[in-house]
Amino acid sequence: MTDTELLARVLKPYREHCQYLKSCEVAVGGDGPAGLVSARCEFEIPESCYIDDTGHFNSVEFNICYNQMLYYVIAKSVQDGLLESFAHWSMDDYWQRQLADFLITDFRSTFKRAMRGRHFSGEIQILDVVEWEGSDIREPLLVVHTACRYWDASGGNCHGEVKIAITHPTTAVQR
Image (cartoon, rainbow, N blue to C red):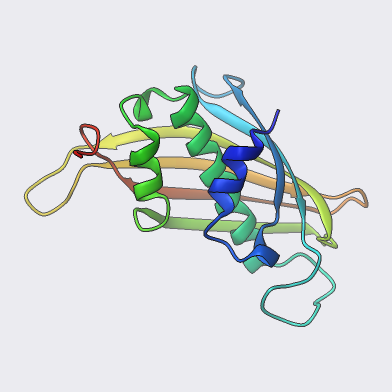
């Protein structure tokens, strides 16, 4: 079930009219390597936050919805200890990094069939998490490979693959 308190905190940086993610059910395991995480989500976009109605779900909305899914799934993973790569993160580590330290390094989206985009479903899978050691010029990173897809009741269909680099504390944030 969706942790509504966590979802509200994850979406707090977004303007109220841009909080598209309404529910997110996280699962561990599945088809990928053992211990990886996936989630099924429900979205609602009452109106576009940046343009007159295009009549279809577009790449900007795809990206915003993706970010909201990813932020929630990583927060849930940290909170509940679902991913080994985040095992020593505290929730304070997560909140400190949620915006500034999550960087999309590769983003690919494919639209197979147009979606209306008002009420629709989505799914995200964490396919792989790779830890990169730090150096004199770069902090340690977690590189998270993901896949996602969206669909609606009328057969709309799109999917994507996204790679994220996250600044990775080697120990919990010092207080």
